[in-house]
Image (cartoon, rainbow, N blue to C red; front, side, top):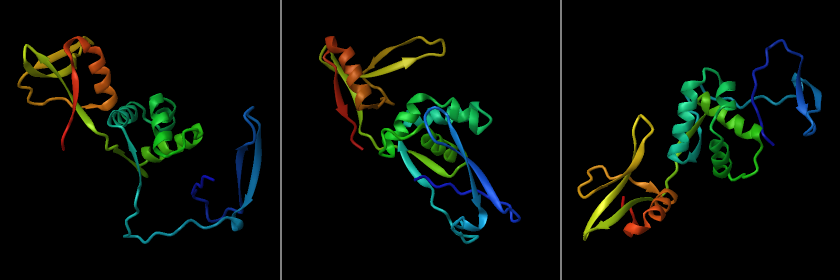
Length: 186
């Protein structure tokens, strides 16, 4: 069961809600007496409320933040969030088949600052190759024109760290150079 807290005007006697009763889009109009509804938990004025924290991959959080800056309202944001966001949130909350509505509620709560997304602690890897007996770092790059490539450097100052999946994919593409992944030591 998913609970929502809503503001009800002081003079309200009842509220109505539309509840979808089947996948075909049939709705049932529910009427609730306000006196029968439980009160929301109270919080002291100076108390700090702990936000729910959900761990997501860094690139997914970046995609969510980019979508928020593009859309000026929560509906546009939720409807146009990258599809990978829904998959990753479902994985993170441990419900791989969570409904679209449940994930949309989580995104909406994040949009309004009630939930915090933090970077998932995943192991990171460097990718290295051996060129003429010299170990070199591998970096993928892309410029503003959309051109991309791979660079090799012996003295890479800001060697890029990859997720395990990205490192595996890069190593698989560089088999002729005997590429290997090396775990980043924190």
